[in-house]
Image (cartoon, rainbow, N blue to C red):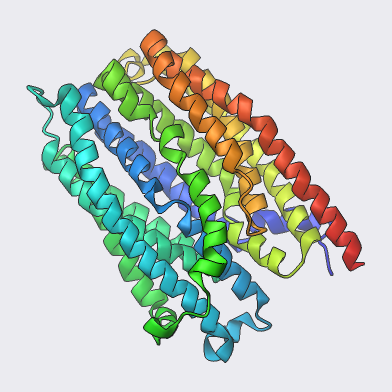
Length: 453
């Protein structure tokens, strides 16, 4: 086994096509993010800004209906791909039957989940939005919400297919596709905003993203998908009940806590504190999300690679790659957080009208600290799940219960500051559990590496 030296390893990390293509996606979203923010500031009132981010929060809640199945598909596809002696010839051999079966599962579950998503999200959004500010409010939200409710499930179904392709190590192509989708989304949103569409811009942008994604897959991976779909009804080599379900239920148990953890923020703030507070929180939280997404590149983009290395028993490479990724992620997040705080200080001094659209400095600092802890936890999940296991069920439910109790209480007492503080407390509590899980897998790698010598 060849393990890169520290110098060559650092170079490989920086110039890895997977990392570079993931960086391109983040670069595009970094450019489109501020454009979206400027459009929101220019074309939406503060109340409408609250609706915009509440739309996004509701979609986040319902997207958890997939219950981690996308990650399971990616893990199974990556393990099967890694187990093949000649992956480049997999689609021309008889050894691809299990891959075909995994794609079949992805298509079926993706379709069923999209239908369930639509059935849940449309009435849920109507209840939340109408119950607070719908009556007598100037914001025209019903039509835009129906459009978002239709398009969001389509993008969720597309994510299942993307998970399979990434498991088959088509990661760079998938990243390039996401970059073009982001460009299409912002272009469509701009067009709708400039023609006075306001909240319609969100659904229109998501629809454009979906259409570009489908077209890209048909052109770039159409032949591969067609081969994988051959004999669709008979592709049952991988048993969902015997092989996938034993892992899926644990993912589902963790994923089910998602709406109680991250999806609650804006809908709950919208309900308890009003659309304007929800708008400020959502706007600031989305900026921190951009910083976190950049920081995650170094590890998240290699999730399928981790699974492949695990399948090939290349544990030293796995751990070395993960360690470098964590270091780069930490530095990236720290630099982004400092840049945000400096920018906020300048905005508060020079642009008070813009500052009124953002959270106060204390709430922002609390969110940044909590986001840094969340980042550390997420990085550990990518590492542990490469073993095709899900050890985070207990931690996820502890986190969810804390958020269910602390978040409403914090919002009622201190509004945005309370929401930020509740988030921070919950992350501090669950961090030791996550670190203990990592320690356990680290010790397993040491043992397995000794056994192979």
